[in-house]
Image 1 (tube, rainbow over the protein chains, first blue to last red):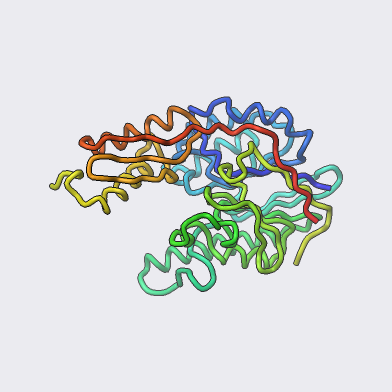
Image 2: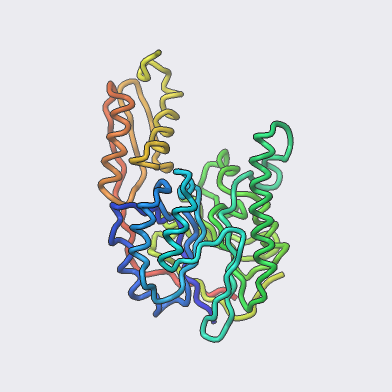
Length: 242
Length: 87
């Protein structure tokens, strides 16, 4: 069995210094890996990432992350990612990582993802170049996620995103903003490639549990949703769907 | 240029929300904002007192003629994780 600890939307800044560190102490007792589902910082300032990196130093288990929209806000997302990578956090965008967890092989494919909406109520690749660019970005990151998932020849495959791949886990958010919270293209990528579990954040007023049309469990681990330092998902080896 | 407080409330709500999102001291997208003729009500939760206080500061700077009722709560995350077995 592989135990996945996951949380998103930590929104770290200097005022949260010391807030997450105590939770790392017991992490190895309950989990084999910690996954961070984006929005690691408040406004994407690399100094905020430094504070989080200090919290996560010398972790008892591997830590894998994707960035979120807040981490892009200052146009310094590369620096934010570099700070975290230098502290030992693996930051994924359209790529995967394979970890040896107690003799089993765990694969994590990650992408920030993006918005656009869900089947029947979504933006289309049509009209002005700005609209095409919006939808095109979602198509690009969804394709990157699918490629990364397909490349994982592992017992367990996790799809890690910031934006939501389904609308079920957005229930509680205003329906008008669903297109800014996720995209069906992400869910379609997960279903096409197959995964054991899909994780996302971003939707603070959503709910934790959902499932893709193809049957992959989805968990919204935004911290305001789970209201815990992190939650833990236990997966049987080799239970990949798809 | 028109004073912000002279604009219809309909637009003021969104101007406040944009200020809370874009001000580098805040970067907050999840505070609920209600504007009346002379008052701004703020609700939601943030993880620190510092964040709660600076949210009100930003709104006072934008709408100095309004009274700010800051009902944003401070909620620190504690507790043990929920453990779910899948499959």
